[in-house]
Amino acid sequence: MRRLIWLSVVAAIAIAYPLLLSSPFQQRLGALVLLYAIAASAWNIVGGYAGQVSVGHVVFFGCGAYAAMGSYAKFGLSPLFGVPGGIVIAVGLAAIIGVPTLRLSGHYFSMATIAVAETMRLIVTNTDWLGAAVGLSGPTVPRNIFDLSFLSSLPYYYLFLVILAVTLFITWWMTNSRMGFYLRAIKDSERAARSLGAPASRTKLYAYMLSAAFTSVAGALYAMMFGFVDPESGLGILISVKILIMAALGGAGLLFGPLVGAAILVPLEEISNSWLGGRGAGLTFVLYGAIIVLIARFQPGGLLSLFTRRRKPTSDTGASHAP
Amino acid sequence: MLLEARDITKAFGSFKAVDDASVTLEQGDILGLIGPNGAGKSTFFNCLTGDLKTTSGRVLLEGRDITDVTPELRAGLGLARTFQVPQTFEGMTVLENVMIGAFLRTAHRKEAETKARAVLERVGMSRLADAPARSLGTPGRKRLEIARALATEPKVLLLDEAMAGLNAHEVKLAIDLVREIHRSGITLVIVEHIMEVIMSLASRVMVFHQGKEIARGSPREVTSNPAVIEAYLGKRAAKAAAGRTPAELMGGPDL
Image 1 (spheres, rainbow over the protein chains, first blue to last red):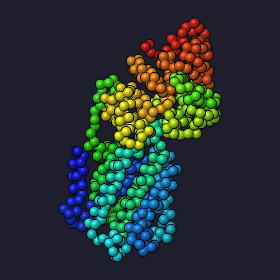
Image 2 (cartoon, chains in turn blue, purple):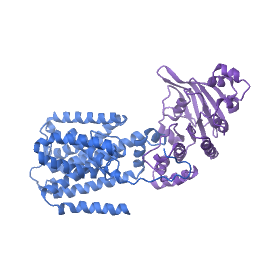
Image 3 (cartoon, helix red, strand yellow):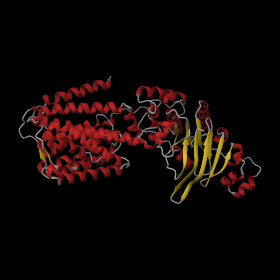
Image 4 (cartoon, rainbow over the protein chains, first blue to last red):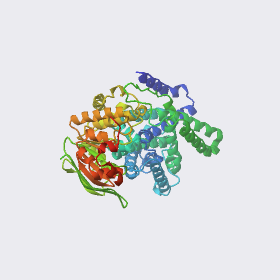
């Protein structure tokens, strides 16, 4: 019941935000927060719940972005048509990457995902068909509404809000299913989970593929809003890092963690960019580094974990001692 | 025959941790695996559960060759285990820990929860159901390991030092629990250091020393076997000990 009230409040704020704070800057900021919240929530499925810290998620982001722009630039179709294609490619790629890399544990998995992402960026940078270093552009002038090319950020805002709601709903549904339980078990002890019949490799792979699908959608939406994609904005490692930090800052493995993280980091970045102009780009990295250190040192569970209640055990059967 | 291991050898490089060990397990058995530290009993145990791949030899469950079957599929076939160092799912409640086991036989959350609660009731932990598992101490964790394994509805349950780290009173409670599990029709394999536990539970015992099986039989037979005493205490002590009861010499808490 209490959860429901909180949920309604958050939903009401999210719906009312662009109407209350209606300057173009504020609306754009809101849309960006939601966009990154989608990507970070998608990452959360495999990085948070399953504990497989992917630092190469931009690969899937890029699949979506390139598929959306490609469907316009190569075939003259609405970028919208590229979305299913992007999802299919991302999921397929996740399967190919996941089978060998998900066997790796801890940092080795993270490093493998970085390697894959950087390789992909270099391949795309050198592929003329994908626009090489210049990238691909979307429709400059919208031909019709299906091009999803708007001057105002308002339509994007609500589009992103709907997609985020869908992402969070599916994540929530997953965490309450057997798969979600298995993922949490695998995160704590893969060996024990397997001994109890949890098919660890398969479960992790499914989570990775599901995560890739939503990340791909986030990439497509990003490309549609900005109207273009190039290797840096679609496949750069900074995007992987951003997504990861947002989820970790808000609370990895918590449903609303990534949204909280995005709501803090995106405005911070936008403000620092507008203050420092082009010179601020390098500082963003410094900021992210500092945040990683702070989270790791003081609140490994993320900010939202401050609010999760700690239930005290009833220690009256003799089976429980303080460890 | 429920579980059978044929000529199991497990080598790490040139070192044979288990050298050509065989065992058969009938429905209703309680097989004890004993031996001094580093004797290879845990390695043998992990070959049975699939945590380690055997170098050679076969493992059969109900006549079916499961040598190359993964641990998760062995669980599905009715083989459950506990860990010597409890592998508690720290981020979950006690109930959720047990639900992971229950999910093996049902995909539905409600059903898994109902079953997990029933298992917790059975092992006497139902009052702790909603406590975070990380708040449990060693005895609680050991018991939780058993509860989780029971929730998978095993035919054979393998306990890896389920009593290690418990005090005499807790050992007694744990022995009662194991007896109750045995009465419910589950066949057991127990690796144990505490002689008293083996003496009071096992119907058959297999003794390991330096990777090889050196004796097998009833607990009484095995503990009066000179080779066993020698393995535990050394040659001279074995001579000196002639005439004394081996269980006395091998220690274990007075129960």
